[in-house]
Amino acid sequence: LAKAALWPLNFWLPSAYAAASAPSAAMFSVLTKVGVYAILRLWTLCFPATAGDSALYGGAALLWGGLLTAAFGAVGMLSSQQLGRLAGYSVITTSGTLLAAMSLDLPDVTGAALLYLASSTLGAAALFLLVELVERGRALEVDPPSADDREDRLPSFTEAAPADANLDDQQVVLVGRAIPASVAFLGVGFLLCMVVLAGLPPLSGFVGKVAMIDALLRARGAAPASFPTEAWTLFALLIVSGLLAAVAFTRAFIAHFWALQDRAAPRLRVIEGLPVALLLAACVSLAAYGDRALTYLRGAAAQLHEPNLYVRAVLGAQPVPPPVKGTDR
Image (cartoon, rainbow, N blue to C red; front, top):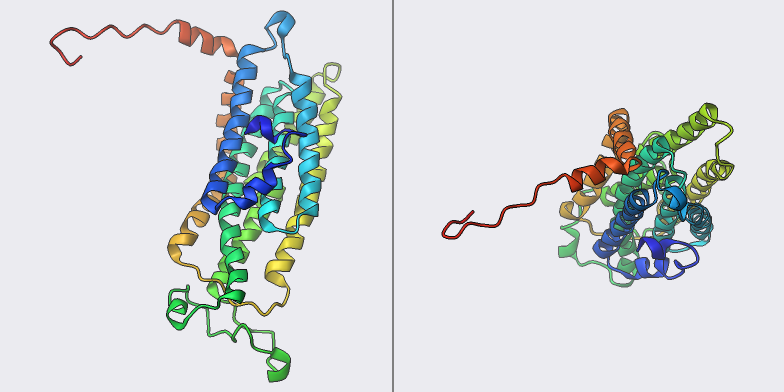
């Protein structure tokens, strides 16, 4: 999945994510990021900076492939009219950003990228789960719920006007109109997903992006002669992709939550909203404890870029003795 997420092999991913069921799409987004980490693990293990002639083999392909992938995903997000495709392109954008950042062979940048990886994975999974709940409201226009079904809906803050009520004819003042609890939950959840995936403050996506930018600037100040010029392209991409993602998500939020539409509130049970709430709570926790998480992940990145530690640990492991006859050991 990580290789397929690279441009130009990823043309099928947004449609596949949009067509899959919400849990499957959320799991696919997680597996894509697992594949990105697998590429990082194998690349730093097999082609470290100390590997001689094969040092950092394929790094340029990962860098430019990641940059083109992130750019393709950002443009795709702007062109998306469906929430499912928007979520799919967001996975492509974050995957490309991660591959480009990790290919620079800078441990501090890799550590910040790992924080962004965790944050974007949680945010994308929550977004795919939200998309199915939001699209359910469109289905209600074709098949309105019965009176018994309405009882299963989350309670509203107060009694709201019917979805098919003509506010102009009834001269109902819009200010103070109650929002059903299901719509409020989906709207707030979508906003939080937007903040995480676009890298806006104050959630963990912003922490990861700022940490990557800070690591790039510190690497530039420490060794300006050896600083790769391609890193400036990544620097600009981190800012521009976040801006384009914010525009795309804001447009989708206006179309589905802000604009006045005669739509019934979707049915939403607590058990359906609980996974979304837990995933977003994890993003909030990553932001609240970002310093601790970043310190831990920078240590993990330092070990990734020092494969000798891993090699010695594997080669120094003692084999497990064969079991003795007549015993369970």
